[in-house]
Length: 270
Length: 270
Image (cartoon, rainbow over all chains, first blue to last red):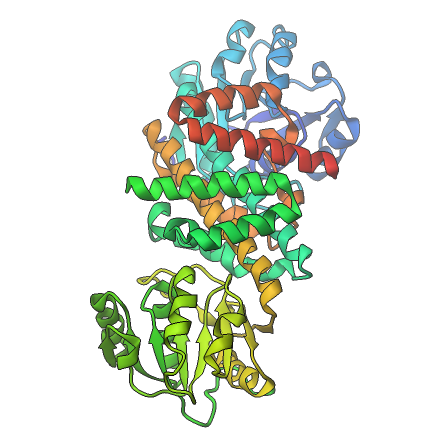
């Protein structure tokens, strides 16, 4: 990956996207900004394909077989849909490199297609409407062979300042870590917002706390950053809070118990 | 609270601190910067009192009774310790306003002391060594009477741009919301870091994701910001991830199940 970051590779590249969801949208737009030609977008929901194709100024289709020829085909679909799709695309454009963007799916998913193949997994939470700075997103790459790894890495390096080769086995850990660090933290914030609303309080008042929670982790490990009743093991507070949460929702109370216990146990292991 | 923010009240004030933990440290330093005279710090652990007193240039004592006279006495101790401490301090400095800083403790804790009393709860996660911008921290205030509320609010307004009067009942919700938004999110990040280490990956790679999780919440509600396998209900991914997590820790697997189920159910309620 000896190329300068942020500079488009000298040879132009044409790619197509199967999938038009959050990740596909942000990745396709970022690749286009790097000088990559996105020639077509496919989605089972034609309106999704049309929305993304509208942003890119390219063709929208409903079936992948209708996509124009390309050097690289990105598969950004629901992880569970990938194996079936790979089987179906076996004989399509044999010279194209097949690349998927799923954290939890092995490169092997393409094994039987016979295509040169790889993975480009940008570890970030994407929403269609929200622009993100791709340069800061760690992109994890893997490929069936060195030449393909080089081709994918060239584009990844054009997108991001951190391109890290990683095999499928370790990427599974990465993906589940991302689930804890994003999906679960976000859900805790959602529940916090519900508790605020329950008492007629503005959920926005939580934002400085949420910002500081993230900012602190640049300074110290999470274990050291931990504060609050569970890490202090304030039994009275824990039992009163538990009671209050149970009045709002029994599921939230279960989460309260399990998380508090887990924090307390981690502290004891210190 | 008609005063200009950031300007110290014209009458000087002398205060003392019972407690020298994270919150006491950051609050006492911030008050001193606002022009408040912090005359003494007390902690059962004398070395803690000395550390904070060293920062402030004041007296450190082990027993609250040894503190110099003051107009305001801040109690920043473990929540569970507050009732016993309030009883013990009943006859101490009858003219001083007693103020506690605990999210989960009612103002009533001071009822039997006969002192004018109040609460100043800055909703933030504090660590001794980490400076925070107090101006951005929402401070929730309550007092036994209007005059005392005014006196506390004057200092709170000097510390922060958001000073919000809030009764004890609603502050309990606020505090448990803060536990979800900070303690639990931070713990999820800790577990994410453990999963990274498990696979020999750098926990720092999670930071852009964690930053974006927080940043996104300024743009959209948490429910709308949610991404990942649970909200998409990718059953295959969920079961494979569950299996992987269980190999690392059964407690982590319990958290994985409960959080994923909770995310999925919230989505269905949409």
